[in-house]
Image 1 (cartoon, rainbow, N blue to C red):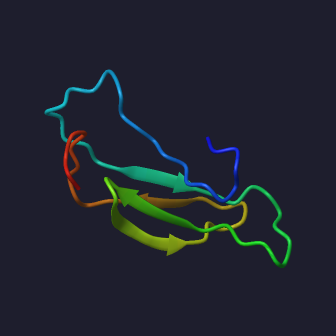
Image 2: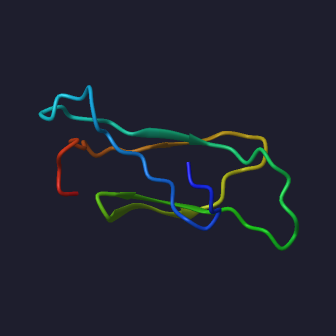
Length: 78
């Protein structure tokens, strides 16, 4: 996880994955901290550099699940 709050969080598949596999992405988000009025937390999701989810703000103390209909491969070019 990044120590700089302005830097991106990157998740890499590095081991234990069959490189011919097909992956289905499901991500869950929730704002668990109370933000000040001048603070904003937004997420944009990219896969291999390609934007697959526009920036969004997770709800406070509720879960937002994002399901991607597309199939992804661990070694795909995006």
